[in-house]
Image (tube, rainbow, N blue to C red):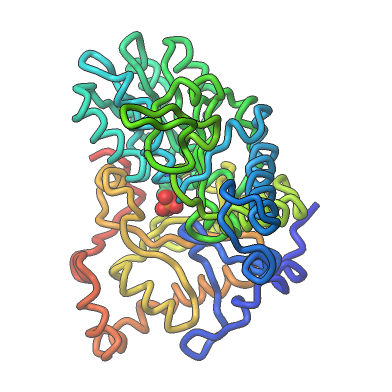
Length: 443
Ligand SMILES: Cc1ncc(COP(=O)(O)O)c(C=O)c1O
C-alpha cells in the first residue's frame, strides 16, 4: 500500500505554515519529526481530564493516569516485538539517555581491563561518546568497525575485530547520515558467538521500518519519541528481561524502590526499577498515541515510502555534477534521508538559502564527527523525509539547490548572512568544499 500523503498531511497543521513567505517544506525529520493532531491532542485530554502523579495516589485521576502510562509501555513492547511486554520497555528521555542507561547499568559493572567495546565509525555521538567514556572509566578498550566506500559497514573487518575479548557491540540500526541499513541480525549473531552483548541504536530505524527485537535477537534497543511522530522528552530502551533484572539501576530515588531503610534499599519490579522520580506521564501516553498513528499507516508502508523518497532524491542529486552525495548509491535500499554537499557552497549557507525558500534541512556534522572525518569533509547538508513528504517537495529542494550558486553572492552580501555568522562556528563557504569526483571514504 502506498502512503496517502495528502490525507496524512491534514493531520499535521504545522505543515500549512509559511516560512520566509514560502510554504514550509519540512525536510529535517531525522532530527525531529512533526507531530499529528492525534498525538498532541493527548495533552489537552490529559491535562483537562486526569493530570496527576502515577503510582502514588488511590484517587481516580492517579489511577487513570497510572493505567494509561503503564499501558503505553505495553503498546511500545508490542510495536517492537518484545514478548515480555512492559517489563522489557523502560521509558527514558531519549535515545541518548537509553544508551547511557545501558552503559552505566551494565557497562560499569561488567566491563574492565582486557574487555573490548566495539562500535562503528558511523555511530552517532550518543553511542560513540558514551562508549568512549565507559571504556575510559572501566579500562576497557574501544575499537571501531569501519565504513566502506559504498556506505556499508565492513563486515569482514568486523569479523576480525569481534572476538573472545568483545564484551559489548554497539551499532546503529540505520545511519543518520548515510541512510545505510545495517545487518543487525548478522551482527547480533556474531556478538553472541562470543557471549558479547549487542546494543542497537534504533533512533532512525524505529520511526521508519517494522521492528522485531526478538527476530533481530538484540539485547538492547533504543529509540526517541520525537523522531517518530511523538513528543520530545520521551524515548525508550528495550532490554531482554533477564538482563534488565540483573542490571544496576542508573538513576536512584522515588518510584524505583521497593523497600527503603536508613541503611539500604531494594529495587522495584521492571520496568519501574529504571524509572526513578515522577516520569513524563503525558509524554509516555502521547508516545503510545504516536505508535498507534504509525500503525494505522502501517510500518511496511512507512518503510517503502521512505525508500522511495530517498531513491527519488538520490538519483536526481547523483545526476548533478556539482553535488556530492554520501552513503549507499541509488538502487540500494536506504532510509529516507540523503546527505550531500554542493560544490563551492558552505552547508550552513546552503541551509540558509533553502530556508529563504521555506525549506528546512540540516547542515553540520549531525553528531557524527568521526564519520565526517572518515569522509574527509567538515560537514554535510541532510534532507530527511517522513510520512507526509512528497516528491513535489523534493523537486522544490532540487530547484533551490540548482539556484544556490546564483543566489549565493546576494546572500553573502545580505544582513541575513552576517547575522548567521555569529551563530556558526564551522568554516564558511570559502573553506567548506573543494569538490572532486566521488571521493573514497578513506584518505
Ligand atoms: C542514529 C541516532 N542516534 C542517536 C540520536 C540521539 O537521539 P536523541 O537526541 O533523541 O537522544 C540520534 C538523533 O539525531 C540519531 O540520529
